[in-house]
Amino acid sequence: MKVFYKNSWTIINQVTAILLKLNFSNLTISRILIFLSTYLYFLGIFFIIKSITKKLFLAFTLSFFFIFFRKYLGHLDYPTLIFDQLTWGVMSSSLITFIFGLLFNKSLFLAGFFLAILIAAHILVGLWLILIIIVSLIIYNFYNKIFFYKNIIFGFCLGLPITLISF
Image (cartoon, rainbow, N blue to C red; front, side, top):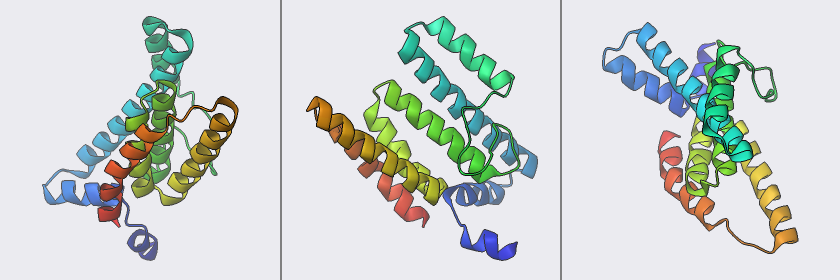
């Protein structure tokens, strides 16, 4: 297990190490990570529902329903729940939900920025999502002849230094 943790030094490990050096307790760090992942899930679901229905109250209510009743929006390569013991899976799943929410909300700059952060949190999931977004943009641009991906590239380039520093 020691080799696994030594070879998977992600931004999650680094933030946790910083918080431990600042004398945060294990319980407090765990609560911070759970709050962050739950908040990202909530925002992602909220943005998706709001962009589909255009109703804030319905989006808020359904987002709360998803979180409170632990309804998740699918699995990654392995089953990951909203609340789980696998921190990397939970954080990457919540970041994916948040990024898709930002894309639905047309916040392309922030989607690109958090896409770069996702690579720092879980490299395989981050690269997988980049591939999906690139293929989707190519297909979209082929049919619509509209090139709007400059913001997502700019956001990705701004998040890339954080990712590179974390490795």
